[in-house]
Structures are given as C-alpha cells and as structure tokens.
Image (tube, rainbow, N blue to C red; front, side, top):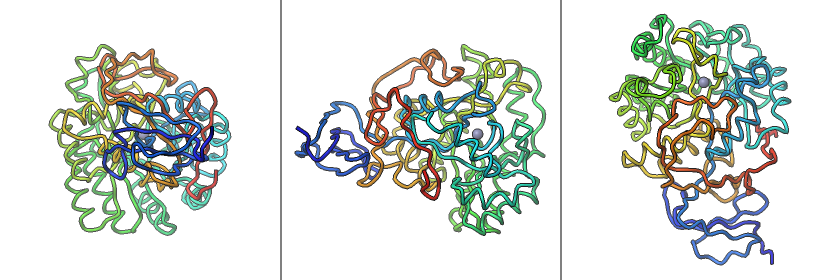
Length: 442
Ligand SMILES: [Zn+2]
C-alpha cells in the first residue's frame, strides 16, 4: 500500500545541519519532503532501514574536467558521471577547459550542453572560462547560466586556454564584479615556476615552489579587494597561502579556497613507494610534504579552506607516462575522493559532518547550487548510503572513469558509497541527471 511518500530512508547516522543523528528522511517527487525521528511512522511505497550505514547528502564536486567533446578519449560525460555516482557525488560542475572548444563563449557552452544532454548519470553544471580576448563574452556566459569563470595565472597545459596577464586578470575581475560574478583562479605565479626535468619527483616539486602559489594567491586577494569581485582559489596546495587568506577573510575580502583529496591524503613520500609510475602523482600545483599536508588539515579545521573537491582531470594512460616535463598533470579521483578524505579525516579525529561540510555544503555554497549539498526539506533528494567502515584496496579495474589510472592504486581506503540516489531514485542503468544552470534553467 502506498503512503504519501515515495521513499523513506532511516539511518542512525544521518548527517543533518552539521551534526550526525538518528533520523528518517522521507522523499516525495524527488525532493526531501520530511525529516523525522528515526522510528517515526511515515507511510511510504518503500521504507528502508539502513542499519549501520550512514545517510549523507550527495556530494557536490565543483572541480571536474570532463573533456567531452574534443578530448572524449580522456573522459566523457557518461563515464565521469558514473564514476561520480559510484563515489557518492550527485552534482558536478564541469571546468571550461580540456574539452574542445573550451567554454569561453555561449556557443561553446551550447556545444558542451549538447554533448552532455541525455548522457549524464548525475546532475551537471558548467563553469565558463576567462581567457585573453573574451571579456565581452563573460556577461553572456553568466546570463546563460555558468556558475563563474575560471582563469589561469600560469600556463594551463592546453594551448586553446591561455593564461591571463596581470592586467587582463584585473579586467576580468572588474567585469565580473559589475554583474556579481565569481572568478575562480588557478593560482601559480609563472615568474616563480621553472621547467621540471626528468623523472625525479623532488625536481618537479622544486620547479613549482610554495612561493609561486603564495604570490598568485596574494594577487587574487588584492584583485578581490580592489574590485569587489567574489574570488575563489582553486586546488590550494601550499599551506603558506593560509595566513594571507585568513587575514583577507578576516577583513571582509570576498575570497574562498578549496583543496583536493590528493593534497590531504598523499604526500611526496608516497610517490617513491607507489606501485605505478611516479607521474601518476603529477598535478599542478604539486603534492607536497607531510608537514604541508598537516597544515592543510588545520586550514580545513579553521574554515580558511571551505571546500574539498577532486580536480578530476584524466587523460589517456599514454599521456600520463613519460617524465615530469611531458606527462599530463592531473589526479583523477571522482570515484575515490570521499573514501580517501574519510580515511584520513577519521584518523585525524574529524567526523562525517565535517566531510559533508567540505565536500557537499561548501561546494554547493561556492557555486550557489540551490537545493544541493544538504539533507533539508525542499532540497533535491540526492542521498548516499555510506558504509563508514568498509575497507577496500584501490584496484584501477574497479574504476568507472574512462582511463582508470590512479595515484591511489594499491592503497587501502575506508568508506564506501553503497547506494546513491539522485532525486530519490538510485542511480542505475539510465542517465537521469539533468543539466544545471546558475539561474535555474535546466
Ligand atoms: Zn582543474
């Protein structure tokens, strides 16, 4: 007999409003319709007690490179979104580069949307890009629904997405400020970078020092302060940047920062011990030493870093080989980010509400994704039944992304998404995701 709800999920470890407590979550028409006591009578077509599993909101990953169209052999919408669902991610926001064309005008955005439509297993939104010469395109992209604009201070790795010179970046900030736009920045100062040589990780690390990040982050802070544009520092690696970010936030500068699972869970010492090629760990900025990693965790605890997102940036296995000068930079962890972060977070005394704050609520707030990132009445019923105790050794063969090369190969990770629901329906064989837009268009 059907009650008024389509689905009720009961968990003793439901993450709600920043705490973990027993609760029942009732779903109707794809949305959270009620949150009640764990044993509350809630008539429903399906009523599941999750036993020892935790119930989390679906994660929001605002830093994903899907690469379709144009470099679909690196990654595509179907494979990336399947990997996302398997990792407990129900919303991702696609970066404007590595697909062809890059998302630097509204025509390119439409090409992206056409490539994604009907192929996504979770919900997908899009960032736009700010590159030299496309200032007039920023407002139209904003109106078409991108969540903000990515730009680079240094070389992006692909020729069709050049970095902004300092005066160009200042102009992009001023343009975004005029319409309340968000600028998200790959912050490494090219003047402080040198060419890496060979296959030695220490040399690669030395070629991209913390001072490069610090100089660029200080410039982002200055531009946000001068223009009033909201700014966000992408994939923060160097803990040296935490002090200026904290100081800027304390004086009201609209600047936020994210870091990634690999900076929080791996360190330079892991590279030599890894079973695969060391270039599996190549990403920019680089994975640094243990003391730096400890400091990033303090930055999360203090709230200076508000988001943990993957920077999932795959390529073909061939392009990931070679030396540090030529190998593609990127660590792909859309499917593994939650388990990686939970493994380390739990060992450091953090709880599931912390992980949810960093990986769901924080990114949803960054992009302004209404109805996402929290279990709350009226929100989309994007939910994850999470086994916090499952231990799995990472086998690349078990990854859904197109090219299962991973820096996590052979590592034992704790925690697994057992079931992922998108708007109240388990993610399964049909691509039921929708394309999201900042202004609500779908
Ligand atoms: Zn990226």
